[in-house]
Every structure is written in C-alpha cells, then in structure tokens.
Image (cartoon, rainbow, N blue to C red; front, top):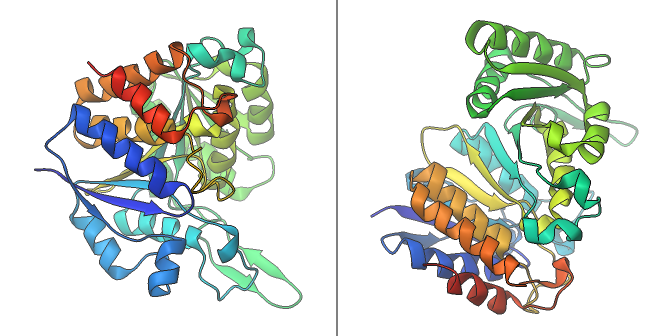
Length: 342
C-alpha cells in the first residue's frame, strides 16, 4: 500500500488538504497517509520548520502532499529567526527535488475570470519547468549592519539535468529564459542549454529569451509557450505570473521531482491567513496537485484524469469560490467535485 506523507502546514493548508484527501479517496482507496507538522506549525511545536523526524518520514514515503506554509506571525527580518519558508528549501534539498513542474492551462469555464481578454488566453497550454535546488535561493548569504549579499551559483550538471527534464516534457518548443546580457550564471545557463539541445534533442525547437522579455510575452501572447525552462528565482516569479492566466492562484498545482525518492506535490498558492478558518478557501489547486501526484508519483493516469475532469465539470456547472468571483465554501467546492467523479 503506497504511503503518502501529508504536510498540512499553516493558514488554509489543513482545510484544503482535507478536501483533497476526501476527493482522493473516491478515485484511489488503497493509499495510506501519515501526517507531520511543517512550516510555521512545526516552528511553534518544535522550534524548526522541518524537523529531522519529518524529513526522515518524507524520505521513506512514496509521495508527499504539502498544502501551504507561512503567516505574518513568523515574519521577521532577524536572520537568526526560523521562517516557515526555510522548511520548503530544506525539504527540496533533502529529497533532491531539482525540478518543479507547473502546468498552466486556463479552464474553459474560467476564461472570463482572467484579467486578460479571453482571446489572448484561450488555447494556452504551457508547462513551466523551474530549477529548484540551485541559484540565489541556495547560495551563500551574508548580512552585516551596512550590507547584505546573496550568491547566485550554478554548476554545469545542475543545468544539464533540468534541461533534460524540460526537453523530455516538450511537445514542440522549449523557451529557455535567462538574463545573459547581465549575469554570468545566465551565460553559462545559455551555453549548457544550447549544447544539450544540439547533442540530445535536436528535433525539438529551442529559443532563448531574456527574463524581462519573457515576462512581457506571457501576458501578450501566452499561447506562444509550450515549455518554459528557467532557473530558480526567475521560475518562481514567472510561474506565479503565469498562474494569473487562470484567473486565480487558487487554481494552479505543482509537482517537485527529480530525486530517487518521493516527489512533493503542492498548490502554488500561499497560506492565505486572512481567510484561514473561515471555510472560504479554494481547494481546487490542492485537488489538482493530488492529481499530479497520481500521475507523476504513481503512474495512475486514469485516476489523475478522473480528478482533473471532475474539477473541469464542476466549474462548467458553475462552481465558483470567492477567489473566482463566487461564494462557494471549501466544503461546497469539495462536494461539487465529488459529484462529478464517475
């Protein structure tokens, strides 16, 4: 029986995770679950956002479902204070998860919920492939009273492996995003991506774009993109921008893969502390993240498609949570999806 470690985390995390588990049970009744504290909840209970015990459990598991972390009570400019987000970085590093996959496909029922015109976003179907364990987020950091610095660093093997992930996922084109006109790491990035493309994937089109140009093109011509390949910080920013094509961050799932062990599957949205405990959270991104877990973690394509189709149908029938302009509660959204599972 596959074992899944669940990390409810903070804010709306426990609420949306509970919804996803209810829906998962309808398409896969042979899964076992093991819950552990994570993020701010773990800081409060154990003084650290990711304990050795939780990391060990994740390493033993077949997959990890993570809901949300963070909140204003843990915000601090004190470099020595533990932060919930540090748990995310440590979890990715500990599991060797170097590839973050974020599919972006606006739902037909929500085309008018996007801030962009329907004719611009209709037909968009892209995948953002973000390098997850290198770059400025993991580089050496220094802080004094007068200055601060963050080192951005990449190695050739790190770039090679994420490049292969992107090309293996592409249907026709990979757009590699960098800032090679300014950054030395980006010059190396472009050189390595170009070489891997020519040696291993010559039948897939490759184009290079500077990150500022790519950010503009995402809102002007999102249908242009098939797979966007980029480094850690650029990918963090661009994938959140791309998420708004769907009308809400509450609709975007993600999968973090690459290690020999468990992958981590989580919604892109944050912990939304302002609505935590009110029953207003949108659980759909968490449910769609569970679908990615079924597909990428267990190879259960039929069950994954059943979840995604149920979300599609529920939206077509008028399901709208607050972030989508409606008033459906978390429980009502869960029930609406369950009704569409056949």
